[in-house]
Image 1 (tube, one colour):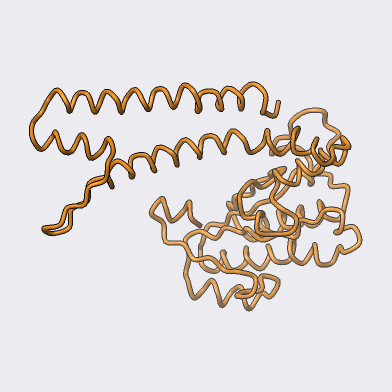
Image 2 (image 1 turned 45 degrees about the vertical axis):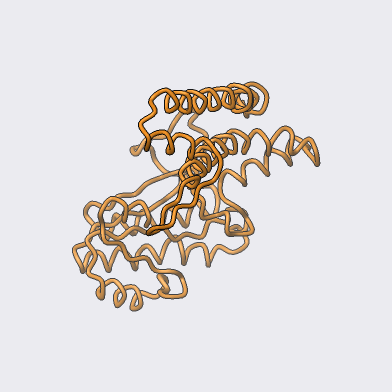
Length: 262
């Protein structure tokens, strides 16, 4: 939603508590109230292993719910975007699959997702079906299962027997340290700029001045002392260069050479 909104589209999102997409009447009523141009189905039952023991809930969410959405889109003449999965194939091709390859799901989850695809194609002329092996995004951080990246890291660590400090050394630090360094540099730069600006604050007839490079440069800028302005700017540049070379560059090298995931 944030991405669509940022591109200038009017977006309305519905949580599961607001509309039950397994209920055809509820879907039709909700979408008719918005009259959308595009409907994006971001809902799914995605617990692959559990679906083998619970095929009915998987089929309701991944199959019949898609049917309800496709029927409502046909009535409203709305475009439909549906996310499917590579589990509609059996994985034996030995190459990347294409849109023209014959589906052959091996489990209940894949069967339910293929049913959704077929429903979308049956009720609509040109549905957009996107088959993906994983959905990436920060949303999963708020759930107990985590997002795709966290899940892959957890599974890899479990398969390789990575525990405790080795988990942090081999998995977590390489995963987060480069981003931490980038964030720290950005935050330090912002706080440095703010501290310089805040060394001289004026409010009406009141001027508060703190000792520092910002106040020094502001003082001699006001008096027109070019030599001391140059000195202040020179010291500021030297400080930034030295700080970057002695700290930030070393942290970047550490992240690139030692704390990274190959």
